[in-house]
Image 1 (tube, rainbow, N blue to C red):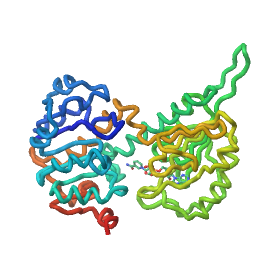
Image 2: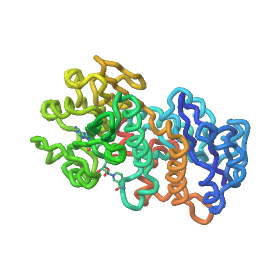
Image 3: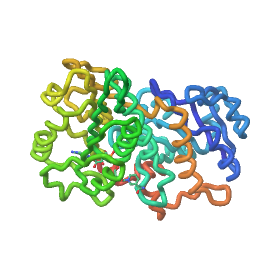
Image 4: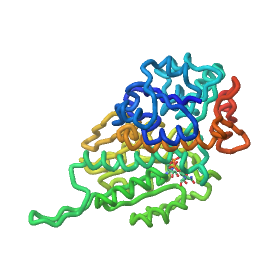
Length: 382
Ligand code: NAD
């Protein structure tokens, strides 16, 4: 069976589905690996680096799809609606396509993929269970985003992060407030601490308090009834507008007291809640920075504009929508490990065994046999 790795076509996407390091594992499982020329260039991997590990470089994209059984992508057509639609024409019923699909934003694209007969697996839908941790691309990418968000804040902030006592006086440490302490938020706290900032954090899920404290940051206590804030999968549930209004009111003084606010608060499959209002931004010191990692799903800050740098009365608001792509080399390495682990988990004696009794297979399979088969996406299409 042949695995194909096309060049990514989404504007600004620098990642590639696998780094060369992932190839030996695929070859060992009896798979041939074919990579479109230049696929790894923007992530720092030359064609030669792939061939050295046992892959074959293919010049033409249509040829690559023609020889493929399994196609590995960062962004399948759902996560690349414009450029990706051309790939849909190259899909055949025998194809198994694995990658990010943005399934809840673009469910109709899943239906178009289903019509080709191809099988589509969504990396966003990997269940958050221990066995699937090494397949969990959302966590890998969130780890990189949390780290990078702090560096973005540090380069835009007109002060240093660490405290310094020098002959020229004492520099106070930067104060950082992290809102939303999932994978990205925890990494942001750790990175801000490493740079010497004083860090506070808040999440609606009370279970997070200890994790925040174990990183040496302060958990911001708020008188909010957050008892039912977590679903059975460990994700935050959407709360009512009255909850968010009260949260904003209670957080206002914390936002005003910090130099940097990093927001990561997301509700899976929903628009992000607005937690930092215009008034709150106006209460911050000029020079302060907001990094809104929820920009792609509408933003946690009222003034965020996706992929723009907004200056509001001297406060800088950043809303990057594809932060992992800035760290394309490590992102591709980690994503490649995640995607090949999923693929190899389905390989039995050199063939693909898509056993839908396995919760990882059934949880991630979006299309099969000409139909959209994932219940949550079927629901979105109704
Ligand atoms: P996410 O990206 O969906 O959301 C980011 C954070 O925002 C979450 O912690 C959420 O609680 C928080 N949030 C939502 N609304 C908020 C609000 N109004 N105010 C403040 N914070 C708010 O989260 P994620 O990083 O994908 O992690 C989700 C959960 O999954 C966590 O419990 C995490 O520990 C868990 N997880 C488990 C595994 C595993 O077991 N394999 C792997 C990764 C993550």
